[in-house]
Length: 495
Ligand code: C2O
Ligand code: CU
Image (cartoon, rainbow, N blue to C red):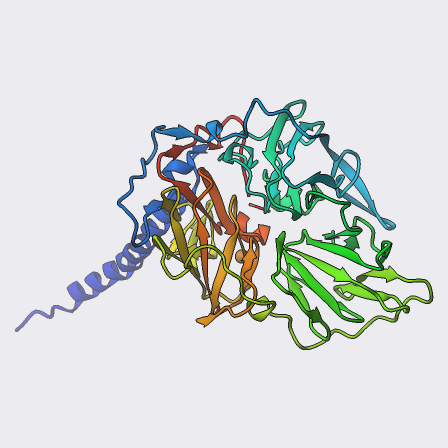
């Protein structure tokens, strides 16, 4: 007689039935837990310790001191303190209920309105802005979008300064080096504060002579309502003595702004950079990226001109007579890559000192303790994103690839960049200098810039919801560090 082994096997199977799922679950959950845990930001984090240094390729060997303060502090990088200001402005931020048409929207004001006042200066002047937080609970800062300010004036909470709590002030001082259309906005909890109205325009007029007549059109969407200069209606402007006007369009939203007109307009400048030999544009949509600006030169026919800023609102350049009818949105797109004529830029963009890759993808994981599929930069989720390190004086190239399903309006602080190619197609028009450019899904950009402004600079997506979700990296100059902390006692939260 042989004993049957069956009951033993059954017991073993039973035990396995209990233990196996538990073991598998543990094996799966432990790494997930670790991922979740490691994605939680410590209560304070220095940007110096964020992610890992990326030295790119080429250039001399550099060091990036992970953590400790060394070399020069961002706070040393200021405008000449002995130079008196030419333009002085007082700005006050407040929490407020905004009247957008008939709607009441909770948001923010600068000097009692949203948008705040347009600051005007002449090229070469020193601007001094004393900025006070009257009543914004979470703290505020001001960032000068598109202006190559000294790093300490860049207004990024936790990187170049602490957020200002209610009752505190900060004085921004910088030289308006280049004529053009720019804007300012809070860089503390910006995905909420900018969208809520804490922004305004900065116009730097060319020096010498009388500035040509212009109109600023700040396009912004408040709680789903499209506006120009805070009003959900058309903006009517008149041409100056010469029958011409420069319409300065500023897109302060998170999404691309489509612009088209009832007649030919000249794209005179992109992001504050004059286009070389621009020609009239008609029958094309000019797509202004989030954060971007275009200056349109308009010399209307006697019937006037109508410039749509999306379907909802328009700038009407009146020339007496009736208001022109709404033009249909053209299918053709304006393309800066082939607009205007080439010009010498004073360097050979193919002779780079250093080169980086900035690859945007989507990866599952945890960002700030939240599970999901998030934006990744070079395969890493925030805060393990790269810190791009350069040396002053270098000509730097960057290859940006968007392998995600959404457009990313890319914005590097403190520098203007020149687009040399898009999807491998070389630029053939005027040098395309920009600070805010849309990288479409599947698209690649090659850009160059001169590392001529030492500091630690954000290099992020200007869809501020994407930035909040981790689409933020930094460019650091060798030997510069910051004493400020993300989080920390000031509650710095730049995105
Ligand atoms: Cu318009 Cu990081 O900024
Ligand atoms: Cu984005």
